[in-house]
Length: 202
Image (cartoon, rainbow, N blue to C red; front, side, top):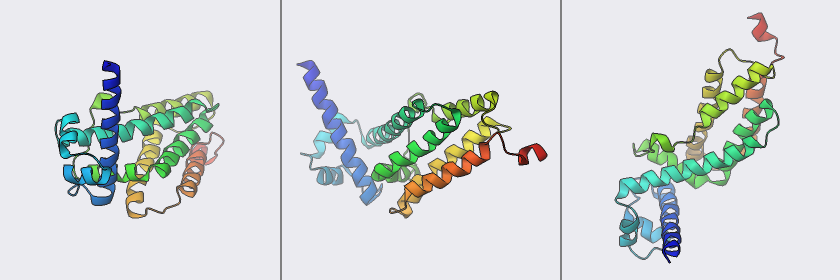
């Protein structure tokens, strides 16, 4: 019985988080009151939200954590399937943008929380994507498959380029992320190619 109650509570929390994401994306941070979430999510009452979340700040933290965690899992799965360091970097970029394309409301909600100063995710709960990407690039450099003078800088530039996409989605909701991902992967693959000659000449 306790397991069923736990499952029910998890389902309710997920329902509230989904409604909050949609409300943030449509109404902005200031418009995302408990009453607005109830209306958009078809929930029974604001008391339902208060029962599952201590306050608005905790709800927003859980929204951010859910969005970031889901994105991290989607990317990790694609990267694990890569057979070379080059394809792993490509998979990292493509998986990020593919997930963003399929979860546009979530990405917009994340940028709104960031802009409102309400994006608070415990450090220990954040996916370590950039560290994994840095390790991929470093391993590729050591094996001779990739080249960069500083894998940390390369990983940071890639990550920051990816993190700019949710902001783009907020202002250009119909942007073609398939084409965007293609251009981004081609750019960074060229930049990291070990057979480039320009870095030898510099």
